[in-house]
Image (cartoon, rainbow, N blue to C red; front, side):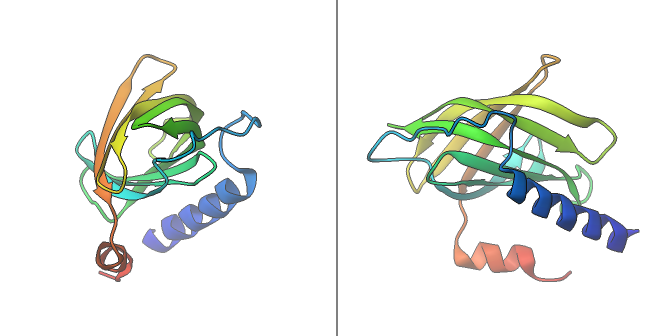
Length: 148
């Protein structure tokens, strides 16, 4: 079961990377100067989560099962604008692997470059998830990749 789930997550990640995320094909903008670009780890509603924000505003997120932090429960991808400590205009899709399917999301928040990020994800049904995180270091990345 774990092997099938890992395979499904790997394929989903490849598909998401290929399609570029949310349904909005317009590129996001990043205010010159300080942006939120980077890889962060933290929690979203008590679940372990990581988020990757690219220089062009694309974001990719994965979050864990609430009871087992090494099991991916879903991913989200889309575009956002970042600059001057603010994330705004974010939109994309959440791909939930726990039976909730695909749903549209919007993203907003704040950040301190290379120090912290706080983001809120709002769903079309009115639900909201809050992510709080810090930049991932090489050591934390290697720890996450180490087999358990």
